[in-house]
Image 1 (tube, helix red, strand yellow):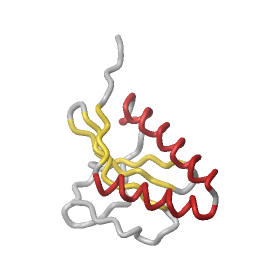
Image 2 (spheres, one colour):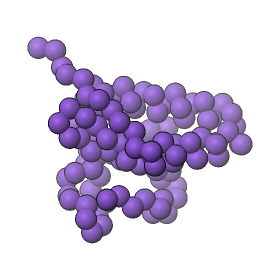
Image 3 (tube, rainbow, N blue to C red):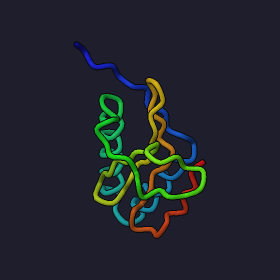
Length: 108
């Protein structure tokens, strides 16, 4: 039986977060910025094929966030993609640099 593929949708704010991280890295090392994007592309492929393989982001404890809703995917050593699965779609809502305290993320 063939596995289904999920549609992966990147929220505008997640796209802006990734851009900000990439621009910061590019100032220090263009090679590191390229590596970040390459690693993120791998994340997109993994999410497309099996998003349920990733753990729930239980550390998200805020009003309005239903437990066991958001999942996380760690990549490139210190970045985390926060996403949820709905039907055949994966919605990436944030790309966080885990070195930043609280990372300014406020999910719905």
